[in-house]
Image (cartoon, rainbow, N blue to C red):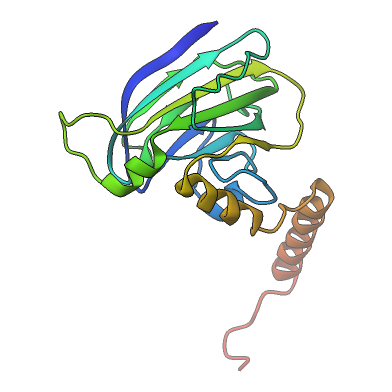
Length: 203
């Protein structure tokens, strides 16, 4: 096991991201079709991570394992999802890109286990200032594994339960075939607009 990063990190709006490309943080799209609402993996190459604290520092660690690690039941919230970087550089990123910490992840398929503790306390605290004690803590564990559906392993807090319910209300993401058809239709529309440009003064 290698620790890729550890220590306090800053959050805003209760959000952190793992990015391997330029990512527009779309909450609904990130959790589309998922069972868990803490680690959004529906957008290829990105993870949308939820924290209890709204603004301030949370404890955070990222580990890379050679194989699936045992589940540590000491954590209050535990979920899993699949993730694959789509670029050569992956990083843990703060809200609006205000900070980032590189993560040494190869371009391959991973399983990620996202664990948290103190989410309700973080939610109730809402905001912490520099130098104040950390309220909630999180751990992301990556290991090589083929893609499979996300799952919820353990739920303790009302905050986590709220986000799981939110995720389950999101429609599934488009299939590869639906995305290909949408791209084909967009290309056809572009061809039509170039072949028959609108003439000024027609209306």
